[in-house]
Image (cartoon, rainbow, N blue to C red):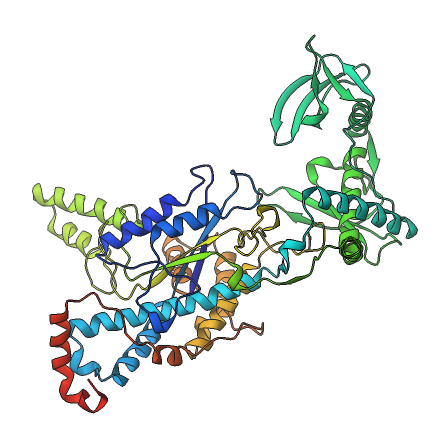
Length: 576
């Protein structure tokens, strides 16, 4: 099973209209009338569908508190492997056989072929529903039970301030004092000459200060800390100005790193990073931080860096340790305070019913004009045509023709726009970034499958991130359970992952031909491992197909009547 994610590029458009239009055009290319479906799809009404205009409206209007520069939705591509599709086909054949349509007698029957295809689509819809339940569960997030009893924006701000103060006192009792954030709302403002704004990023501005003793230096300050005066100068809060002056001094002051050197790691750009650890009696585990080699000075086995960077790294390490060790205590304080004020912050686990998503099943794929094999074939065919016109070497022409890439199912020469051979049933799912249960955008959960799972948490203890490996594993487990599929070892994620590691280790030694085989292997073996994680209850596909009352059809009644006549003899005892 191959599952991939694509984020909405908000820089291109804030709407999903382009995506919906693309999926609707696929209908026209395939001469299909396939509609969208969602979590409400049921076998008892298999011909039901959702119009693209509703999908567009629902996804575009379901926004949270993120700005319009952030992704508002994601697309999942769910593609069973050839072996998985063959297994699904056998289940469809079995269902039709039980309904009186014997495969051997109906192999060329147009109605039989269509009904089998529709059963494949129904299976894909039912699997997608179960997979999206796992998608929701995999975030490990909680959603509010009673939105009407949540604090409003002003009340929440007051609640956070009180919580921060109580928590700060709680930490102080344990000997931990956290540096407060820069306060920009100061009563004392000072006018500073020769401030130059170099660039602005989000809520910050990079400015150049002209210091009396330190010369010119660049620092970041909050935009709200800058007030332009009529004479062209800027005013800054006095405390911010002095903090930035000290920052410049600290940047130019080397400080010894009094921590244990642990290891050296390497970034993707090959830059080395030195990892340090220091025992702090206030915490159960050592504080850890990393410093890039370019920011280090090493003398006689000792490590030095700027005092500013060392303070920054140490403070972040302390904050990380606080979040990990005392995060639940802060959440408890917040909850108790809210309860005293009459708010209801009770939550429950996020489920698939909270998601806003729509799926579309497609039964064919085409080779794009820029596909590797299509491009290579075009160049080869152009060369063959040129040689034939000039009566070139026949042996060379023969060799070129033999080297043309062909579809492994149909044997046809691959060209852009041609349909791919074999079964190509797959699903596209458009899923909103935000839940649909909360009505106030401020209360909606932000759910990104591309955010890596981390140990870090939000202000009140919620986990951040989505473990894609676990999701892929659960996707495999759901398929195997639902379809009673006995997955061979070579199709499991563990096998695939091991092969991938071995290929990666040899990537600088192998030839282009082997690289091509490695890439092909990864495309064909995107199966996922057997796992022990709990999955949501999954209904047997055989039972679900058994309750499909009417399998959808687009064929004229006359064609269907003819199909029934061809099987009437064998199906009379079953009511056909």
